[in-house]
Amino acid sequence: MRCPKLFLLSIVFTCCSIATLQAQLGFCGGNSGDPIFIEDFGSGTTDGPALSAGTTSYQFTTGTPNDGDYTISSTTNYFDWLSLQDHTPGDTNGKAFIVNASFTAGQFYQREVSGLCENTTYEFSSWLINLQPAGSCEGNSIPVNVRFQIWDGTDTNMLAQGDTGSIPGTGTTVWEQYALVFKTEPGQTSVILKMRNNSNGGCGNDLAIDDILFRSCGDNVTISTAANEASLVVCEDQGGVSRTLTATPDSSVFSSHAYQWQQSTDQQTWTDIPGENSAILNTPSVTTTTYFRTKIAEDIVNVNNDLCNVVSDVFDITVLPIPPAPTSNGDVEICEGEVGILSMNTPSAYSINWYDAPIGGNLVLSNDRRLEVDDAGTYYAEANATEIECASTTRTAVSLIVNPLPIIPDDASVFLCEDSFITLDADVENVTYQWSTGATTQLIDVTQPGEYDVIVTNTNGCSATRSFTVEQIDLPRIDTIRSDGPSIVVSTSNNGNFEYSLDGITFQPSNVFETADGGLYTIYVRDNTDCGVVTEEFYHLVIQKFFTPNGDTINDLFQPDGLEVFSTVTISIFDRYGKLLKFGNTNSTSWDGTFQGERLPEDDYWYLIEADSEQFKGHFSLKR
Image (tube, rainbow, N blue to C red; front, side, top):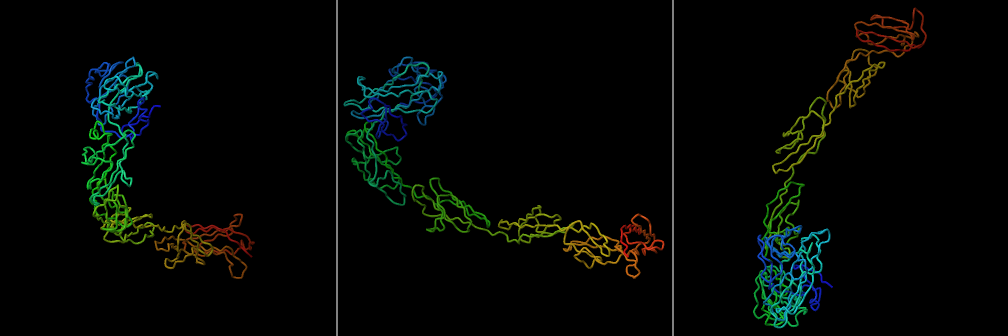
C-alpha cells in the first residue's frame, strides 16, 4: 500500500506505522523538531551554481537541459514545459533543481547529511512536480517516478526507501511533498540521501525538486490543562494568569521521555524555563501574551540538542489588551421620519457594542460599527474584543438629534375659472419654497388645471410637501336656444352646475323659461361658482301649435306673438300641398282659418315668417 501524500503545512497524521516505513513513503506521525538541514537551491536570475562534485552524474547546463542534463534555475520555461515558480515560500527569483531524465533509469542525486544523533528517528521530505503539461508527447508522456533512499554513512546499509509512484503530467502548477521516515543506528551520526529515476528518459520524465528537508521525528505530543484547554484567551483586566500544563506523548516513537519546557513571546525566539524538566509545568503568572512548549527526547542528554529532539504542540496564553474606547464620527441630525446612522471607528481587531447608558444599561446593538436608529437621544459605543468579552473601560457617547418637519396645512383642492388664474398659497412662513413649477415664492399664480406641489424647508433643513389639486371650472357654452311654444329652452354643449336668467339678475337652475312673452331677449348662463356669465340674444317668437277658429273668441286666430320687435314682417301660410292660403305683412300677421271666405278643414298647415333678417318656419294644426 502506498501512503497518501500530505502537504507540509497541513495537520499531519500517520498513515503508516513506523515499522512499515522502511519500504514506503510517509510523513512523521508525531511531532517534529526544528529543521536541521534545508536545501532550497538559492535564488537569483543566473542559472547555477552547479552542484558539488559527486552529487550527481548528470551534466550541468546554464541553458536548456536536454536528456541527462540538469540546471539550477529560477525558470522552467524550456521546451513546452509548465512555466512555474519554485516552491520555497517568500522567495524572489527562487531556484529549483531542474532535471531532464537520462535515457537510462538510475541515480541522479546523492548527498551526505551529517550532525545527526544516534538512535534517533528522522523525517526526510522534498517537494516535486512533473513539468510536462497534460497530453504531452501525443498523450504518451513518460511519467515521473522517483525513488528516495536513506543509506548509513558508510553507504553499505540502506535504512529506508520509498517510491513516489507514477506522477503523470496533469498540467497543474501545484507542487507536492513526499516524505520518508528513518531511524539512525547506534553510533551513526550521518546518512546519505539518494534519489533515483525509476523510469527511463525520453519524451517526458522531466521534473523539478525543491526544499529538501531533514528534521527529527518523535511522538505526537499534546499540551492541555486539566480542563482540556488547548489554548487560553484572557483579558488584560483579569491580572496575572497561570495554568498547569501537562505534556502527553503518544509513545508512537519514543520509549522514554525527557522534557525541557520553553516559553516565548513571539513563537520565534524560545527560552528554556530553568528546572522545568517534567511532563507538568505550572506556568508563571503572565500579563502579556506568552507561548509555552516542551522539547522532548528519549534521552536526557539529547533533550537540548535540536538535532535530536522534537517539540510539542504550543499552548497559547493570549492576553488581550483592553481596547481603547471607540472614536465617534460625530453627532448626527436627521428630520422626523428619517433613520439616522451613528458610526464609530475602532481598530479592525475590535467589535463595537451599543448601549443606551454610559454604564450598564441595555444593549441596543452588538458587533456593528454603525447604529441605525430614529429615536432622538444619546447612545454609547463600547469597543470589545472579538474572541472573548474584553471591553473598553469607557464608552463613547454620540447623539442623534431629530429635527421637526415644517408644519403645513393639509393638501387642498381648489377651483380655477376658465380663462382666469388662481393664487396658490403654501401658507407657511419663515421657510424656503420649491414649487413643482420651479417658483421659489410663497404664492404662485396658475392658469392651468393639474397637480401642484410645494416643498417647504425650515431652517433645520427639514422639508415637507404640500399638494394642490387644481380643477378647472369651464364657462357655459350655449349650444342652442329655441322657442317651444311659449317657453324658451336653452341648451349648452358642456355640463356643469349652470344657472339661467332672462334679465341677468334673477337666475334659476332650470334651462326652461315657461310662458315667456314673445320678444327679443338676452339669455344669461353662468356657473353657480360665479366663474363668469355668458350671454346670447334670442328672438322669442311664440307660435301656437294649434288654433281653434270656432267663434268662441278663444284661440280663434293663428297669431304669432313677438313680431312687434321687427321692423318689417311678412307671413305666408300654406296647405300640405304648398298652396298659398295667406300672405300678410307687418299690419296683418294673423289668420282666421279661411281661404277666399271659405272655412278650411282641420289639417296641418305650414308657415313662413320673414322678420327683418330672420326667418321662421314650421307647422301648426287647425282644429274645429
